[in-house]
Picture 1 (tube, rainbow, N blue to C red):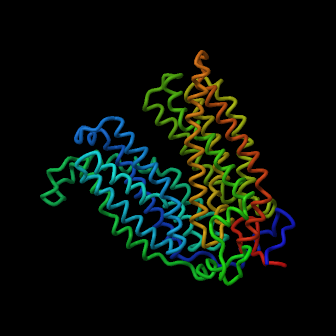
Picture 2: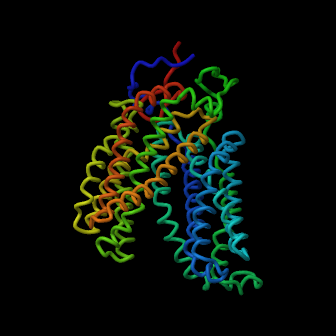
Picture 3: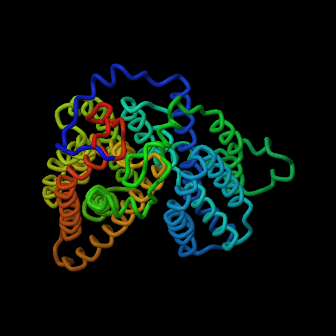
Length: 471
């Protein structure tokens, strides 16, 4: 039995939200623990880049080897491991797998500090990437187990804000740690006090891992979460969950939603990947900005845009939900892209790096309002028992698109090498194509997205009250 699909719109969310109980204190405690774990992961990750130079001199590494550690050791292994880790989380318990992941990446950070050569460091770095591979799919899979549907937008937004600003926060914490680690050298066992500072930095960030794992185990899932996890509305599956579809069958039966949702987010990532990858280089090459000016300018644009977008995301979604219905997340992002895409066409004409960063900040603001609802949208289209895997697939697709856009800008810039602003023009073209086509595909995806939500989610987080299955 599947729900009847008559319209993209659903009944207003307000009556359901009024009847449903709010999240308990233990749910907010759990969210805080998840945020702290995520911040720890960013600090562990950023220590590698912060200690790169003393590490290179100590082990006699080349710049190519440093690049391999960052690109292959971290990014590649994190990418290929995210789906298997998500599979384990869906099948053996997300909280248990998250505990294992924390212990793996903490032990790997300590392994980085103990490495004696490039091979050992590469192995430790790869394990660090694998440990952190499924972090966001697991966490976003856990949030529905902590919060009722009407509060998931707020919980997802708070977590997404931290995750979006995670690299900056990791640098903020990791930088002083690496700088002042010698001041706490006397606190280490005598056998470790003579080690180089970069090694001690890795030990410091790795040691809290077991405590973090214990805190995760103290999280309590909300009452009814296990029942929701057993409930399905998919084809060939009864409400008791006796027959469940796998990931491949889910993709086959929901192909339009998968292509529309994942593809549109991937294209948006393609557009912003061009901007994020090349705007610092353009600021220095075209406008003569110093590294400090580039870092502060771009960081301010991203941070301010993200914070404003995050503040507006939840109230905007609550206001739009009864009017737009289940497709609210996609519509909000689409409207943001209506503003952001034309701004890409203005980039070749900016007179300074500050003006370019200002335009980028406006783009980030408009798109963030909707994109922070991405996790909520993914939760609502996923059967509870496939939630982490579906989130992992979305993450992988977005990363693949974002990886290709800097290359596209470079190729186009080489073709426009005679133009004094060829790089700006190339970035503008690639960003316009990515954001514009992403917006069109997102608009097309609204109806299949709403149908999938109705099919797999008894109580959507956005734009609908509890849906009853109808013949």
